Image 1 (cartoon, rainbow, N blue to C red):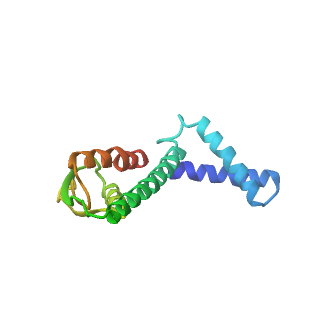
Image 2 (image 1 turned 90 degrees about the horizontal axis):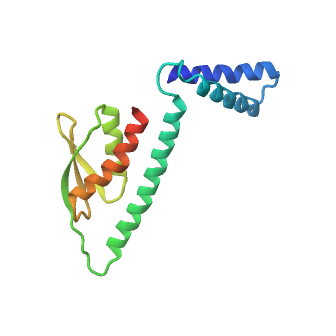
Image 3 (image 1 turned 120 degrees about the vertical axis):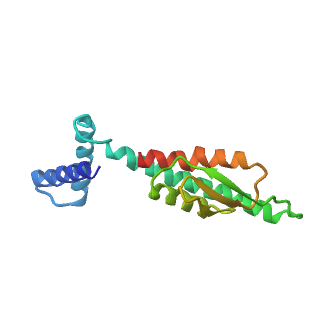
Length: 158
């Protein structure tokens, strides 16, 4: 991935040299043409096309923003009810993520979402223990986390 980024930057600077104009818009145009060239030659370069990971990271960011807004609305709705009808609980979520970086990112995304908190991670990094403010069904919560955050993290890192 770093090799592809380096090639793309070299192509962008080469574009600026050839045009003999040292302006940021010329660099952006050269960077765009570098992306096109790398995309066309992606089968000859090692690894996955790097811009796919950039798009997956953007998708993860917007997924987190959506979940953040939805969780805030749910927490506000739970708090403003005349009678507090919440079912707090702790549940174990098995994870398919392997690397420390992936598990840390998942833990941070869960903890930053209002109403949930990662309390502990098992010694073998296979299970996350999560506290939720309102959890009527633990299996549904595990499925939601696996289908959103865990799946998006795997798209970025693998």
